[in-house]
Image (tube, rainbow, N blue to C red):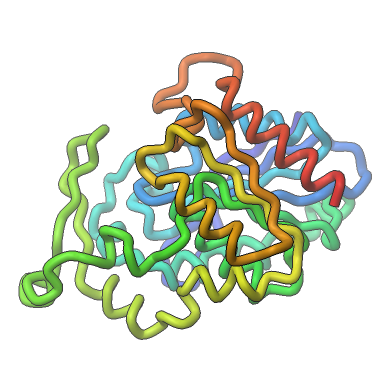
Length: 281
């Protein structure tokens, strides 16, 4: 298996984007998958490497990356040494980053014999589920999209809500990262950018207008993004497919760090469901 980690490309907002690619070199074009992490996430989290290997073994060209402002750096892509960048992140920047990654893979000559550019699937976990859905609706190169424990509404997220007057006055509010114990900043620009681009950033609008195959996967034991959000997404698009995984939590019963050399039963079920979905569509 050909695995290349931490390829550096420059995003539109003067921060690097780190990319990993996984594929079996065959000189035959393979369906392309691009995976987007969620809020307080990163490409090397938990079992994402194992998941990438599973897709490569199944015959896909799999790509995952760190959003440019997720708080990681080139030197330290895991966890969040750059909290200033984290505080300056927003949904629009993540959409720009995803466009940059799609453009890079689409146009890089190194992989052209290995990628089928007419078969591109976006997978987004958690907050990333909304990002990939919005991008899939507006980018005609995308042929499938998967919401993995994805959110249905950015306006209701804690990053967008709260005491707006105090937030505006202070210029920043903080969330505690339960794992690293860091106080992670959200600068008020996050809210301003959301309001300025609210129509584009309305997931319901994107879901209703999707014209490509759309798979929604959710665990019935998810306490971070409740299963009701999956039902909402499914309701908004009559052609969508909904896969509920029993006893699966928000990260499909994995954790960080993930010490095992196999996927959890629940994450394997999710991966298998995506593989079937893409190959059948």
